[in-house]
Length: 402
Image (cartoon, rainbow, N blue to C red):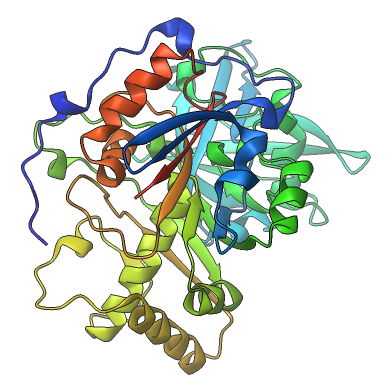
């Protein structure tokens, strides 16, 4: 696959501050929904979604759950130290496992006010968990890598319990406000299950039980994957050559049932959110990796899809290769990481359509949208701005067809 020359200036647009939705609407599914198909744009509300999808659609959701990843500690001097959880380091790098740990854990973090946190100094916070007080301690174990060890004395309490009880909702930086009580439930999809994301898969924030009920009445199928969204999703592109942009690595988990459903499905596959797109396309390239005998680890490097190859395996071949590997390993779950970079020129292999919010100018997500729409992305965004759509995480939605 030939990599085209890309000028990031072509993916900028003016986003007025007042168009950024700072708070969610009162009702999730009352957001506007822009529908783009074959060059035509229509305007709806999200509760109209079941009427816009063909009855043979398979919707794929990301069931990750946002953890309150912003932990606050107070020094004895009164200085406030903020520790933002990024990636687990020890005793495991697997997010679901470390969240259930009941002994010291180490995370790569971002530290606010780090200069005031002295080497060797242990910070402590008293947290009420399950009706009892637990002392959570934190110390820097590697300042250069910003690695922090957390420990607590109660082996009946898991790390996730402490985080849920004391952490703050990690709102995106562009919202430029402190989290409020409402964010605990609204910055979370109604179908979230697997703790580990530090940012919400925001396309899913519009779904309600009523929308789900109407989708099922129409016969639309559903499937779930897990990608734990990392803070890297907000990382701006700062290099002239986009290929040099360090794509963030994110952890994925996919069940056999999902692979089988994708293999058996003959209709349209619509991803709910860019994170689901990244997961599904990574899944396809994992199958290719197995076919090409390039290792059995489920790890997709950012430019692997663009490697030169005489023939790209079919969707069927790739998914069958994955099921064969799962049989070899006697497992019903595959876990891996992806740095996949989707930009204009990429040919989608599993995804036919995307439900997504409106994204920041000059971001990797705009490049992904352009990979789907080509130059038409500008028309879509200009139309959304002209029609007073609300932008970014708490903003309105779109249904885009490839």
